[in-house]
Length: 73
Image 1 (cartoon, rainbow, N blue to C red):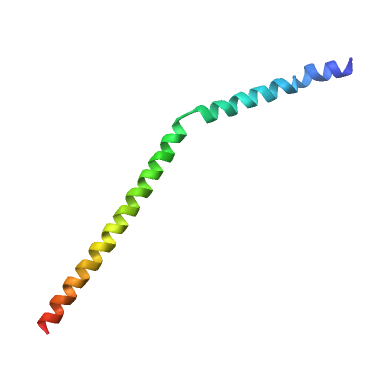
Image 2: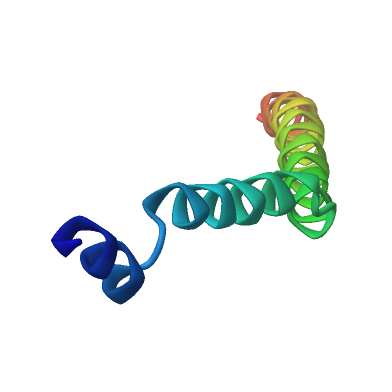
């Protein structure tokens, strides 16, 4: 009798676990978080390309300026 009263008072622990599992499954099924990850990956890729281009162009510009300075004396 006491156990039944405790279950009624505290609720069914299996039902709570099922509700928590449904929330967790729903969280993983949502696609909103995936778009944020995709945007982060795109930003990282763009940043890597920009850094590579700026580094290459910077070295070429430095070489050109050095050649000009050497030619001027």
